[in-house]
Image (cartoon, rainbow, N blue to C red; front, top):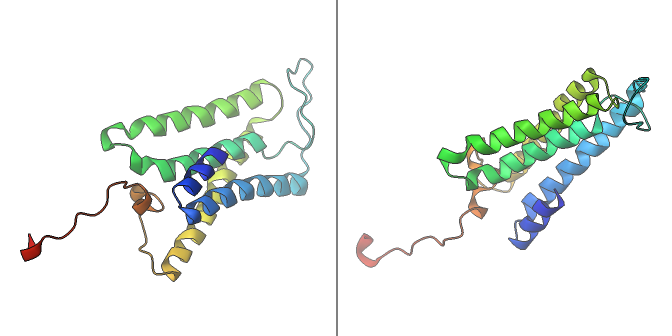
Length: 168
């Protein structure tokens, strides 16, 4: 996620950089807050591969995976040609499913911990995206659709064509 924030900063897309950083931070903090509220003990398996500290619900890695993949899809999907757009969705799904599978397979989480993380991540992204869109509307910027990404004007590297004299 830090790489995406740096990329936005280099492109002078400061609002998107702030949104991506805030979303990643909020996901982590909300995950920790929910862990402290629920206080669910981790599984105790006789042959567990991993022994993770702290509480179990929700899976922090599941929250991070879903949050990161959702942010990447929102900001990078408009850069991908339409014919190739199923590929990033597939890669994101494989990443999120893979992270969840490994957390359960290692014995660090119950399945419900992973499901909770997978639900919490998109909830955080939705909340920060709605706040970002509200801010865009308040500052007079046009509202966007998910297909356009959050700030489509940053994805075009070519300047607008100059108008020709005579209206052509």
